[in-house]
Image 1 (cartoon, rainbow, N blue to C red):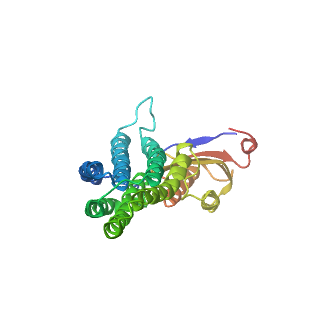
Image 2 (image 1 turned 90 degrees about the horizontal axis):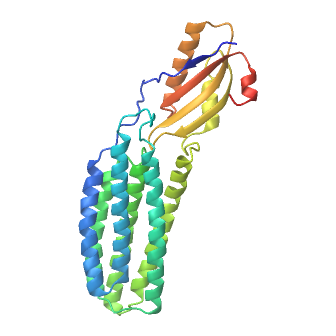
Image 3 (image 1 turned 180 degrees about the vertical axis):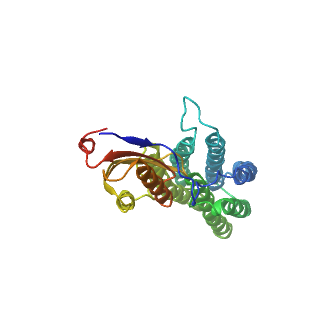
Length: 306
């Protein structure tokens, strides 16, 4: 039984998502480094755990932005004989490492917040409020840089979520600083640190699970295998589809391999046209690279690993 292997890739609209823009990452890195320096200085001078906790959080965001930027640059490099898919997968690894780093930061900052809650230090609420107010501006501007492409790239989504959560955290720190100024309740400072820790944990969990899912080549969350089966089955002259594998090549591109059984009544040219039409339909369903193996009628291949 003859088999035909088609490895060309359709490039009809919708096209593969465009390469990420490095500019938002660079601007975000510069703004946040400057703000981290200000927070650390103010936190140390004022003995504020909430400012130091927020500075640690923002520093982890700087690291994540740098990591995402490096991955973005690597993903644009051409494939080689060793890395035949190029370095696109680095964007997935960057997202996963970003989530892990944030969880580590949560542990460290949470421990320090609890220690300070037991032994509160004297802090100046107005200083905390003013510095955190500056943080609202910095984080909001940075978040908006990633707003447009947050749904099409997990790396951009991670950056957006980090900055958005930072903005909300800064609002809480401002409120805490004002409360301390009027009441003198120094214990509010470490409590804010614990609240920040919880917010980081909640916002990071989905990023961790999504990036882990992609790193082990599981089906991307936005792809429904059953729907893909329906798309394939809807093509004329396809009798059966099996050995369907779908995975993420990067945070923006997905790939598929599949075996299809076709009617013996159609000739070679019709089979090639069928494959190209199928690739076009798959592209409309967020499958950017597909490799289709053709079998005549039902073969034993579907009952074993081929």
